[in-house]
Picture (spheres, helix red, strand yellow):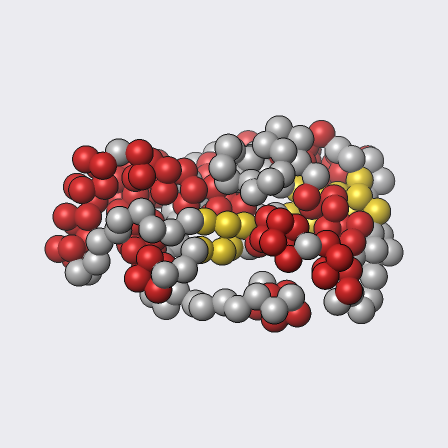
Length: 209
C-alpha cells in the first residue's frame, strides 16, 4: 500500500501499536473484546485527527461495523471507554471514519490520475474479488453495495481486462478457517475454479485475507 500511496501522493501516517481488527475471528470468542480492541484503534486515529485507511476488505468491513455499533450505542461506547481509560488511558468519541484504499483511489484520487502514473500496463484478463465484508451500506464509498464495479474500473485503468463472475462478492469462509478448514478450502476452490472458467489469468483481491 505504501508504494501505491506514494505514487498517488497519499500521505500515510502509521498507527504505531494498533492491533488486529479481529478478522471476524475474535468476535467468535468475545464480541466485547473485539469492540474494545477496535475502539482503541479508533481512539488512536482520533487523537491524530485522522481517518483510517486500509487495503483489506475484511479490516474495512469489521472496523466499519464496530464503528457503527459504537456510534449508535452511547451506553455501550461509555462502557468500552471505561475499559480503555483503565487499560491504556484512551477514550473514543466517534471522531474518525474508515476507508478502503480502493474507494479512496476511485472516489477521491480519481481514475485519470491513476492512469497517469501507470508505467507497465497489465495485459491480462483479471477477475476482481471483493468478498462480502466491505459490501455493506456506508462501507464501500460511492460503489454499489450489491453490484460493485470499482475494482473493474481500476483494472481497466491499469490496462487490464476485467472478468465478470458471480463469486466476486461471496465469502470464501476465512473466519472459519481454524474450525472448518475443509469447508473453507472447498469454498476457495470453487471461487478459483469459477474465475478460471470465466477466462481469468489471475485474481486481484480487495482483501489481504
